[in-house]
Image (cartoon, rainbow, N blue to C red):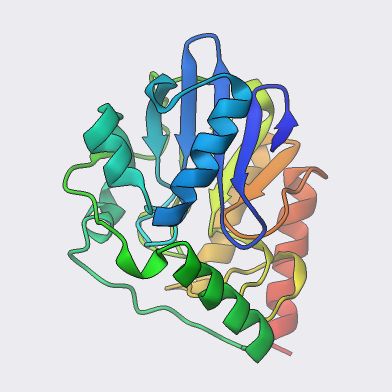
Length: 241
């Protein structure tokens, strides 16, 4: 799905990844579930592109619903995969998360896990090699993506700011559709290691002034990063009442 010139979404509101395009090729942010590969190739075909046009894959963090086909892309097409140093072991399957889950509703829960099973989310191939990145780093990749440390959901969670498309890609730093309750709108993401830290980290995004806030789960948000941060913070405070 084309969101704006040079900006595409792969997948849906349950699990999403994104493509940034410029004259030098494509940068992919996250890689969904293993079965999201078919969504990628369909979107690339519609763009007149192939996987060989992808110059970089940036992982917002190392969870299995974000690294889905990353190893395939790396092995078959030589695409470098970037991940924050603090999540590299997670992306390689060497450590597991111990997240806070929170409230659950049966319908959305079943929908999420049903989709994950259909998209081969239970048979993820972990990365065997990653290129480690750090906060503030600007990658030599299409769109000149800048890394913003966003710890909380995981120790090495990051956001990716791409001024070319006026977007910040936040992974699970926040969500606009809670996969366990079905609630929509900007809010804290489930399965978060340190919820309080995740909320504090969002303030680091405000200075980007980005129009688009693009999560790994939920609809794209186009009302600006400040409004998204404020909504998530309000939702988090409401949880404590």
